[in-house]
Amino acid sequence: MSARRRVADSGSSARLTSSDHVIVVGAGLAGWRLVQALRRENYDGAISLVGAEPHLPYDRPPLSKQVLRGRWTSDATGLANEEDVARERVTLHLGVAAVDLDVADTTVHLADGSALAGTHVALATGVRARRLALTSRRVHTLRTRDDASLLVARLDELAPASQVAIIGGGFIGAEVASAVAVRGHVPIVLEAAARPLIAVLGPQVSAWLEPLPSRVGATLLTEQRIVDVVDDDEDTLRVVFDHGGDLAVRAVVVGVGAVPNDDWLATSGLVIDNGVVVDRHLTAVPGVAALGDVARFSWDGPLGEELVRVEHWQVANDHATRLAHWWASGEEVTTPLVPYFWSDQYGTKIQVLGHPRPDDEVRRVAGDDERWLALYAHEGVVSGVVALAQPRALMLSRGLLERPTTLEEARRLEPWAH
Ligand SMILES: Cc1cc2nc3c(=O)[nH]c(=O)nc-3n(C[C@H](O)[C@H](O)[C@H](O)COP(=O)(O)OP(=O)(O)OC[C@H]3O[C@@H](n4cnc5c(N)ncnc54)[C@H](O)[C@@H]3O)c2cc1C
Image (cartoon, rainbow, N blue to C red):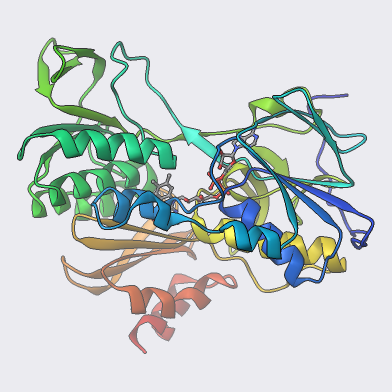
């Protein structure tokens, strides 16, 4: 089969019936929410849920917030317990990765040599933490519950005020640094760019956010090129920079983005291009869909239809609801999908609506240096809304992204002010 099959709009969907068998690959947020949504849609056929990790479905945002700060144990992040699984009548295959997909007969091959034959396959395998080629084996990342447990164990054994290096000043890096500070250690954020988040939110907003790390006593070092991390002794690691200098720390956490878990689909014939490419119904080919972080989907946003892959909790939920409705009823959910993201960092909250780009025009329309709301626009049309510590104003602005809205119109309507 061609590796670059064109993804046409799937048009209509045959309704699921009780003799169907839905295989959900990926037992994370999107996978579990799809199971729940299918049952809410009254689908009463078989559902199999395959998960590479040994755990029942759990939630990731609390890992870098509550768990790392010591407020929750990792068990508290569970999305489902055994009772929920029994109630939803799901057959679980946990601790075993899917390794291949036969699209023609919707069969999923698992790492233990077994195969599951279904009528529909939902791909919800998410992303994994991007790794750097570093010598030390004691470098942490934070994507899974097991990652969080390892990092918590390390932070627990450190003496107070120990230095912890965080490589990458993006959303995960900032949340880790905040938790490290709450635990009484000294976070040192090492960022490759001129400012954290400049590649995501652009020069203006990243400049407004630059003072945040100092609020919790974190040191931010920008334009840092790290060539290696090596073990100095049992207790110390050394971060080595390209300028020849180094930094001795007690722990290192790498937060430099994520890569989609789509490699196992390389020979499936699906279009794989920075995720599984799907149409606006999340369909890759009839009977096979992708959702959540791994899906590169056709999004009908305020600037028109475009292919996007979005690593947001809310989008994974929305995808699950939409796909379940599409498969169960043959009808699409018509309410607009507005991507929403939040991050709790350095004692404050950043929220993002829509799909702002770093080179969009930015206008701060409310607030001051501590709390503000900014509109992003492309060719005069609002593409995103970003807020610092302005949750109500942000939510009131959602309508600006539900249909194309010009900057002038937005400023006249001022939904954030009502
Ligand atoms: C620490 C952390 C903090 C976050 N904080 C926020 C936040 O504040 N706000 C926000 O909007 N988003 C946040 N996110 C992102 C959010 O958690 C994701 O968008 C969401 O989990 C996506 O759901 P998903 O089901 O697509 O992927 P996941 O939840 O990652 O689930 C994918 C599952 O698939 C499994 N899998 C992978 N490969 C295979 C395979 N071959 N076979 C079987 N199973 C497989 C994985 O083990 C995993 O359990 C955070 C993420 C992390 C890691």
